[in-house]
Length: 193
Image (cartoon, rainbow, N blue to C red; front, side, top):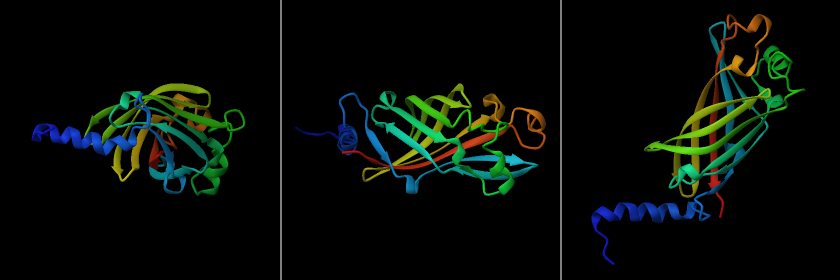
């Protein structure tokens, strides 16, 4: 069999991606390295940016760049594990006005499909549930693959009051704490054999 230059690139791509394809349906399970990964958030209070992170979360990811539409991911976040590093904010976050972790301990992001946007750009399309409120969302992210390891970085911009976060009293209008908040994703994962 002779490979022409025009067919060489697809053939090489198939060869390089074949270790990532572990099932006929196009799903490729990944194991997330939590020691090298982080889920966080960015907000602004009185014009100053603050950042936080979630210390406890789980992620199940099935994704093959060759067949992104067949992918699926579910990330469950323990909202009580949110830390900003400011004692006053950290004490307020679990409370009823903000995350209300007593009634809603977890937030869930579930991607039901992925879209290739060109180059290393992708979108995870699905839903985000916070405080029992579920909304359709699209998470844009970049994906870099090296030697069976994946590094994904994304940012999802939200309006916190859409999820009733800080949606009552002093903080409901965004005068002190902005309504806009971003969820940040920085994941490192290894393809399962």
